Image (cartoon, rainbow, N blue to C red; front, side, top):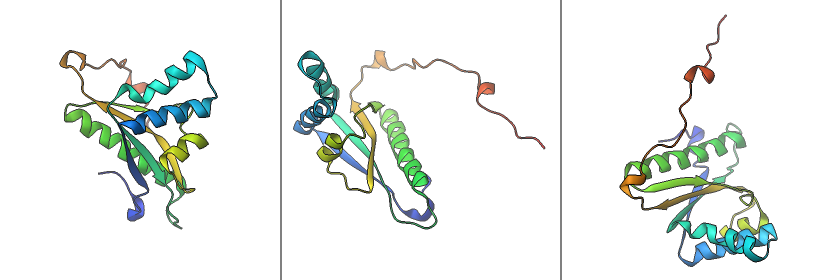
Length: 149
């Protein structure tokens, strides 16, 4: 469940599988204007997982719910889905990059003028020995403050 003020459902998900992953790599290369080994490396990135789920924020006309809040709701969907996939035992990583908002990548996904690509969840298998938290620990006092009078 994610916050969705106004029940607008300002998101959609696009499954990218099989040959569509190759076409996405080609769109990356077209957007980046690369050639040679750099182009080959960039084109191979979508092939790293068997399933990519594109997260799309869809702006719905609303007097009460601004565009930024709608985009935040779509981000919440991506986060919640990544947690659910992880809990189910899948490997999942939210990927973005410089080509997320490129014309070529938007066209490849068939996005409308009122839609923005937020990135992809790369979903695949993961070996049990790889399932550990590599994130650095942090002090909660660095990010939590209390408002006082």
